[in-house]
Length: 322
Image (cartoon, rainbow, N blue to C red; front, side, top):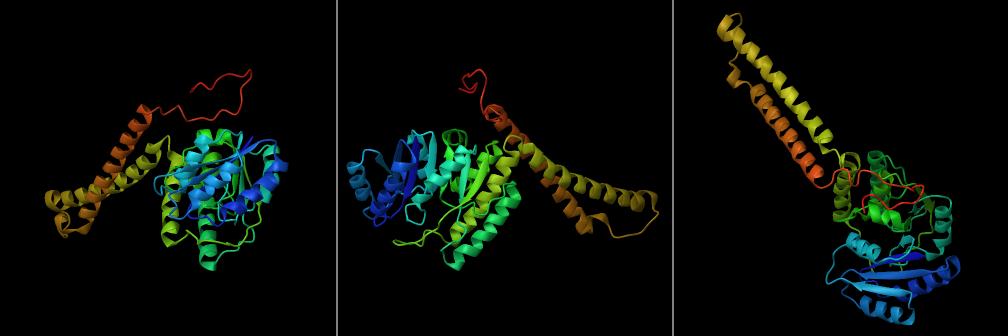
């Protein structure tokens, strides 16, 4: 069974056409499917449109938020409600083509767990295309998962992926990265990208900046989420070590000037190096302390519970975490 999750924000003019396109493709591509629309606080008549299409087809359902909570929250609600073995997420603005569903299913049948769309020929303004290219390059470099279009809204993945990853804030664009970090097989597929027909783009400079901050979060979580002291402790040791060496050198100079009387130089207390070294020692100690606190949080919240991902077992048995 295929569950198609579609977040909606002020897309009333697109919903009827999108439903017709999904039905035309899914009716022949899969035996069973469902479509879940999540109205993320729309201020137009999107919810009324969702209600109309759901009344005409029992395979279509809707969830309405009280206000706008963001795309990640909408996708999370959709994944919690989904009953399918496979999950397809797509945007409601008609730029994602439902005709791509059979190609995604073929890649899943080839053994992949996550199939990420790649808008090879993107029909967007330049101020969206070029920042996106920079963003995709940064994601590939920092996470080790090399994809051309991490931010593509068209993604298909197995239900096991949805069960093992947690998305919040704006981490929905990093679903392939989070799945890759758990050991799932990820691939990408060139898709047909269409020009926007109705409404307006929700993309802006603020979203790009939030994406960069989220990238740093994901890079830290995927690398040090279960071992935070390895990152914070390394920074702390470096700063603490540099500061301690500087203070040792200044102490040696003070000894030569004031005890032995071998040299005559500027007093230690007036040197900028003293302030820098003290600051480095304090910063290093704080980083080490934060690392220990983070380790305590991880340990007391089940540090080993989600530190692995089971592909299959023989003979079949329940997941030990249940």
